[in-house]
Image 1 (cartoon, rainbow, N blue to C red):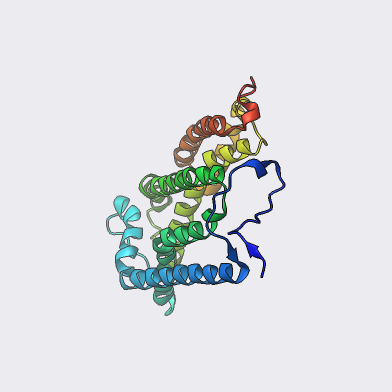
Image 2 (image 1 turned 90 degrees about the horizontal axis):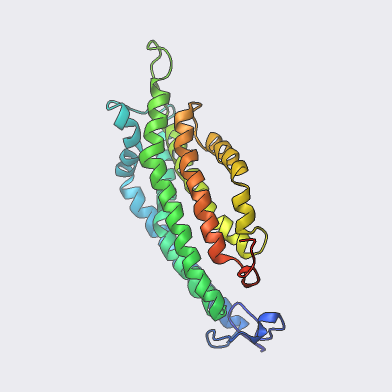
Length: 267
């Protein structure tokens, strides 16, 4: 059976062919599939363990999700509108939490399979990109949980007539919280996206800097989509950090620009 290397052919006819390749030992296609199966099994087991752990502690996790609302309304409670609501929320919390808990193991297994097939130059890029993406994602999620949610829930729960009593379903509330935390976290990946576009030569740092006025409009549009409240204060809480991250992205784009642009004035 023909020998193949991990994730790459040994025959490199591209301009990068002169780059030293020091991947793992050569493996047959069957050996690749066996290793892939092992990585998938380990990842699946990690997800199952994470789901079980989160299912055991689902009430504690639910209390953590309710905390932003109770920060503004101490007696805040959610309601069950269906006999299946409670068990549905248990499964939902267990699934979302299990995926989050298992994500480091899953990412490690993916890297353990892919990285040996990369060139040294590619490997030097993987860890910084992965670390940066994780930092921005977790930073955005933390910002949403501790800053955005208390502000938006405080506005929404107090809005309207005093004669209207808030009766909020548990499913609707959990969906509301998880959606905001997730999408704010994703929007904080803006600097990594800009760095990636610069690395591919699609956008230069100079062009990105020249588009800052348009970026200001775009980040407010993103903030309006991500935040559930119409008040400008909450939207500004999202748009402000995103606009700062735009300039962080310009710096990262400058650091990641292709070599042919290093001596160019268009940086």
